[in-house]
Image (cartoon, rainbow over all chains, first blue to last red):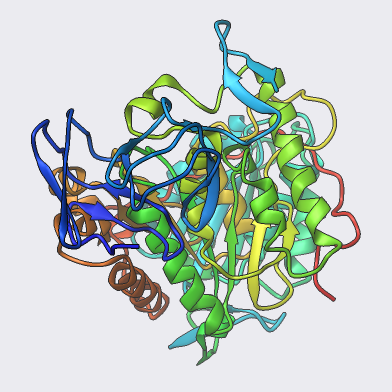
Length: 106
Length: 395
């Protein structure tokens, strides 16, 4: 694993495989991962996550040292990790539905 | 550090006289008698309801006999359901000066206020003689709560409080986190941290109770704004709140008013037991802070992103601001600027150490921002709890 050297990325726990963006990144910015540099394709606001390393489909995503879900597909180092490629493992999942009530989904 | 030694052996970091209204109808009279002494160590608290409630009674008993409290004056209208004589006897049994004024017997508003002020003045003089003794970090109980959260809360202030909690537990203190409704999704992770096997299912049951309760209330936990802020899953959001607990093993579960028996990390279960009947488990951050204090908290660590300004009656509140922009706008209300983490000014470890140092400073008598501004909020409403199940506490 390349330790990220970019000061705009925060690792919350040593075991984490995602990093939190702590500044707003604009499309075209580059993130520094050790010797590598990764292009930011679209605007990323503070609080969003990027992969700290290449992640395989199904791999547990670790933040705060704990699993927060699984990768839906392969994710490259530096890629944005969000609802398009990360799914909850929490069953039953409580989601906010139309009527503002919890909905049990599996 | 020194503390005020109480007869039960507990030590306080403040030496307050509390004035307690026992129904909303006595609130004005109680508030007026406290007013001239609000800067000299008198605090106002109370319960608004007219109908008796075992939880409210227990909360007021634990607050009136909190180690930060030296004396208590109860203010009753006279016809409310609260059992004022039982509460008075419970406070007196601890050796504290305590009395009750009944407005209908004293002769109304003005006379009760006058009588109350005479009593408060005498009590403040009397408790000035309570002995001060050496106090260690291991004598402290520290609670934590978050409020007015934003996208920065879970990445700066909350994990920094977690680091401070770890330092406090290493020093032998007792620390308490809460808000089981915001822990939905990390109950398995939490259960894996149980100090004893029998505690694990109890931790899961606490969060399941919260999930059922909030389901009935129709209050969602994962809102669209969370995803815009970069949070993807419910367990991730919950981990942001949960990170306040640090990395220590979880030693036990408390319900409001239970004092943790030994050093370690405890989860305070704030969701009422039984059928859903009292509305939201806690109507505001203030009520949660009051419950942490009823569990003996000497200090509460309050993390905020958008910028809460509150303090509390009985125990000081240290406010830890997660967002550097909020800090610049509300710096007079904040004690710690955890948002520096986002601007390269500090690491999580450094802010965690700063929070630990702030706890010691406040325990030694240093005023918090909210104390300096005169904040002493308090709120208590109807709830009901069953006693703790076996396995919830160590020993």
